[in-house]
Length: 553
Image (cartoon, rainbow, N blue to C red):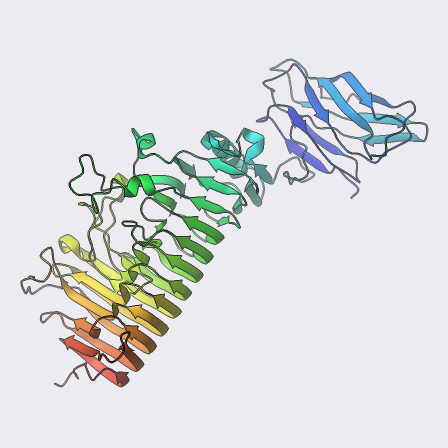
C-alpha cells in the first residue's frame, strides 16, 4: 500500500509494545495525547524491508505544530543478518506529560538513499490492530489492555478498556478481539452502549471463564456474569467458548438441595443481551452456565445462528436461550442440551422464527415464563420455553419467577414458528403452558417438520396451571390460545399420552390445526393415546387420534 500501514490514537496505551511487523508502505504512524508514561518507549523486533546495513540513521523530523520525540538509542541489525529486520530495537523519549499533541515522523537514510516512514509508539502489532489512515483504530485486542490469557489472572478491567476503545471509536465498524489460544478469567462485567460505530464485533476466538466459586459474587449482582446493554449493531461471535463453570452453584441450588442452609435460588446467567437491536450471536459455544445460558431481552432484529449450548442434564434451571419482551428474532442451526428448556420464550414476544435446532437433553421449547432475575426486570414477564419441547408454561425457577399469566398478568405472544428441529430424550416437545389467572393471548404459532425421539410429552398445551399441581380449581380466567398449527410431526413418546391438550373450559383453545402427525410409543408393544379437553379445531392424518372437537360440537 502507498500510505501508512497503521495510524492510531494510542493515548490509552502504555507505550511499550513488541514484535511488530509492517510493510510495505510508509510504515506506522500515530499520536500521543498527554501520555502517562513520558520516560520512553521501546519497539523491538519491528520488521521493515531490509536495506544495506551501513550508515543506518534514524532521526526525528520536526513537523509544524507538533513536538517530535528524542531518539535515545538505535540498534541496527547485524550485517550478517538473514532476517528482514532493519533494526533490532528503537528507544525514544517522549515530551513531558501535559504537552500539546505530539506526532512522530522519522527518516531513515542508507547508502541507497532516503526511506521515509512514520513510527508510532504504543500499539503497532499488525496482527491485532486494524486501523485507517485517519488515525482511528478498528480492532481492540484485550491483551493490549493488560488481559492475561493464563486462565487465572482476573481480566475484566482489561476487557472493559478494550470495549470502551471500540465503543467510542469514530469508525463505522470496530471490534474487540479475545485472541485464540488464551483463556481469560473474567469477573461479572457489563458492556454498555450506545456506541459510536454502526457495527461493533465482539470476537471470541479464545475462551472466557467465570469465577468458579459462588462466594466470589458476594456483594455483586448474583444474576449476572457477562452482559451487553443498549448496543445497536452488536455481533458477538466465535469460534471460541464461554464457560460459566456453574457446578459450585448447582451444588448449592435450592431446587435440588432445599434443606441446605444458605442454598441459592438465583444464580448468574452466562450471557445477557439487553436492548441490543439489529445484532447477532453466532459461531460460539456456551457451556455450564450457573443458570440460564443466554438471555435476550428488549431486543429487535436479533439473530442467533450456529451456537452450541451444553450443560449436564441434571444442572438446575440451565435454560439454553431465554427470550423476553423482544421482536423479530431468528434462532437457527443450534445444538442445545441442558438441564432445562432448550429455548424458552417469555411474554411480549412476536415474530420469532426457530429453525434447524437439535434439542436434548432438557425440557424442550416452551412458551411464557416470568423472569425476575434482576431488579430492573421486576415486571410480570412470561416465557415461551424449551427446545426439548415447545411449551408455553409456568414453572417457578425461583420464588420471584413464574410463568405466562402469573399473578393475572396480560400476555402477548404471537407469530411464533418452530421448524425443522428435533427433540432427543427431552421432557417436552412442542409445549404451551399458561397460568389459570392470566389474561391475554398466545396466537399464530406454527410447529412444523419436527422429530421426537423418546420425548415424554411430544405435544402439550396446559391452560390450567396453578401452584397446586394436579389440584387446580377451575377458574373463569385464562390466557386465550388460538391459531396453533401442528404440521408434519413424527417420532416416539416415552409416556402413554403423546398428545395432551388441557384447555380451559372458560377460555377454550380455538382454531387448532393438526396435519400429518404420527407418534408411537418408544417402548415396543405399547400404544399411545391422544387426550384433548376444550380444544377446538381440525385434524387430518393424525395418529393417535382423533382428539380435537369441532366448533359446532
